[in-house]
Each structure stands twice: as C-alpha cells, then as structure tokens.
Image (cartoon, rainbow, N blue to C red; front, side):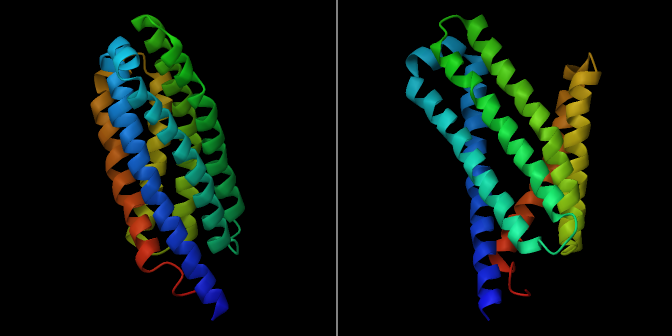
Amino acid sequence: MNATMNARTLSLIGGASYFIIFFAAIFANFFVIESLLNDPVNTVVENGAFARAGILAFMITVVFDVVVAWVLYELFKSHPLSGLSVLFRMMHAAIMGVAIFALPMALAATESADILRQVELFNTIWLIGLFFFGVHLILLGNIIGRPKIIAIFLVIAGVMYMVDTAAHFMMPNYDDYASIFLALVAIPSIFGEMSFAVWLLIKGGKDY
C-alpha cells in the first residue's frame, strides 16, 4: 500500500512538473525569444520586465527538468536503462542552464546585432542540449513500454530531436527546410510528451 501510494505521488509530481515545463517553455521560447528576434532593441529597452520573465521561465524549466528526472528514476529504477536515461536528461538540463547565461548578456546590450548574437548563442547551446534530450526520450520510450503508443511517440520524438540538431550543423541550407524539421520534431514530441504527462497524472503509479 505504501509503495503504491508513493509511486502514485511521484507520478502526480512528475505529471505536474511536465506541464509546468510545457507552459514555461512556451512562454519563454515562443513569446520572449521570438520578441527578441523580431524586435530586439524595443524588447530589451521597452519591455525589459517581459524579457526578464522569459529568463526566469527558462530557469523554471531547468528546475522542473531535474524534478522530472528524479521522478522517472524513482518510478523506473528497476529497469537497467533508467539510470542512463536520467543522466542524458540531466545533461540536457545542465546544458540548458549554461545556455541561459547568454540571455542576461542580451539584456545588457543596446545594439540589435549584439542582442541577436547572444540570442543565437543561447539557441545554439540549447540545440546541443536537445540532442542529448533526444537520447533520453529514446531510452524513456523503451523503459516505460506501455502505453505502447506513447512509448512509440517518445522514441520517434527522440530520434527527431537528434536528427534536427544534426541537420542544423550538417546542412548549410537548413533554413530552407526549417519548417519541415520543426514539424517533424513538434508533432511526435507534443503527442508523446504531453500524452505521457497526462498518463502520469491519471494512471501513473496505480499499477506499482
């Protein structure tokens, strides 16, 4: 009974943490970073609080990435790949933490070129981290096993993260295919990770 309750509690923490990551990342990436890219000087000078909130949101994603890593290890530690999977997620979190250092530098700049240079540095470092995150998802899909459809989407998403990162560095004309790669990453990632988060909240831990 205690073991079941403990696994259930961990699953609820993990599912809730996933959703915190989702919403914080959406705000930080699709609102703040996009604003910095489209109107760098105005965002920094006129909307400094908005930009700083984006940095805080990215920091929150790192915190809850570590929480999710801990939850997944505790839930699946009997699986031989669990420790390895968690290490790759922790690598991603650590690299993301390093990437965030570039953003306060962007806020200290006053020229568009300087701001964009720091944002590009952030995106490049984050992109490297996503390669290791992809490895984590591939391992996680094999670890959870069920629901089978969620496991499959997690593996596909992991492969796509790795392919996208490799394409960024290997294809000089990557920008010509950026929208295609975005779809290839986003679709399985949203279905896989969001479904897994919902599963953790509704079903996770009940069978342990």
